[in-house]
Image (tube, rainbow, N blue to C red; front, side, top):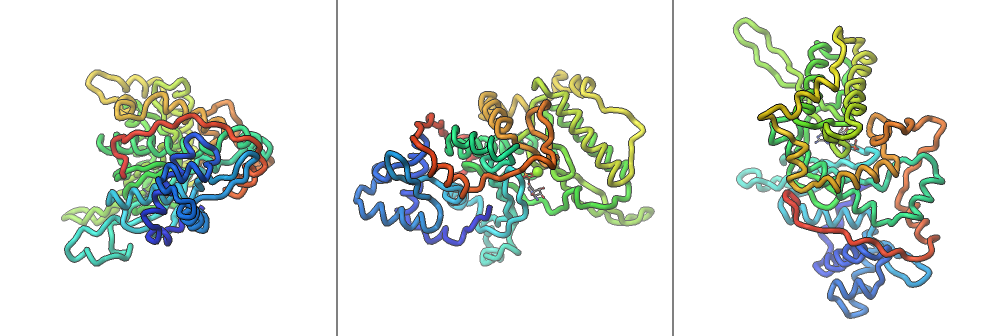
Length: 411
Ligand code: ADP
Ligand code: MG
């Protein structure tokens, strides 16, 4: 899904108040009645609120939903994107939005610029000169489903509010893991902040392993990657989708010295953490082995390389975790505010909607089959959601979403 940021600077303070009111109202109303929008925003004047709503609707930030009992509005993906981006702008995390560089199954990735740092740079509004960051927008509602039927049934039963809440959980989780890993000197992008369903982090100027056809020393790179899996395990973590899409390969130049020629060192950087799990997870061994197999299979196919050594084995890796004096990042993440309850909720949702990682395998269910060619893969686009809601009957009251100012959340 595109992020059309061009209108963001045209929204008036009142527009933002109304947009925020729709968001707040949608915590316990699937369709937010116009009157409630007026009440929450404090713009009681009928024509006033209608005018704001009309301009928000024109920009596709809210959409009108006709309902059996009353008419009202729903926040769109675009509306939520704007609210998040607005917070990042206000927090000085982001200055401007550039191109989309990734369309994943569960997220969209944009290059954004950090604010100019002053001095000669201060006039540099063009993204080319600025420090580049990545804005990752989680879209857990837009997921491949096994079939159209289950998709529709699911969406009919569940609230449209859950994609908002669940995408927010995914962003919170990803930020928490990045922060813990970055502070522990793991090769991951520097996290800058998170807001709602989005995370801002440094842009890694490198290609995914997927796009690399040749390396000078496959055995060396293989060992580096296996070493990383073991390092993750030693601090209590399993990536869970450790594959050629989520490993970016930086090239570090090593200048020539007296007796060695100039050379290039490959430096893998790992991204994409919403499915990461603790080494204490019930299915930890399954995911550990799958991560290892992903690398083995890729090196075999792409570089014709097979390691002489068997393993590594989960049992050995797990022994390393929790050695006296060792760090446990799974525990640190939990302590930082991404609770075990949140992790469970997110995992259950990803499983229920059939979230698949880049590897195409179901992210949370070892028993689930990989989506095959004979199965229809559909994306629940916003239009579909609209259509479904318009068909739908009664409004369901939604559970209250707990909102708090967690650490690192901008805005
Ligand atoms: P998804 O859940 O969609 O797989 P990812 O975090 O893996 O989300 O991002 C999708 C793609 O976007 C990656 O494969 C990579 O090419 C690019 N990407 C994501 N984050 C970064 C980053 N920090 N720096 C550079 N490229 C990135
Ligand atoms: Mg990915």
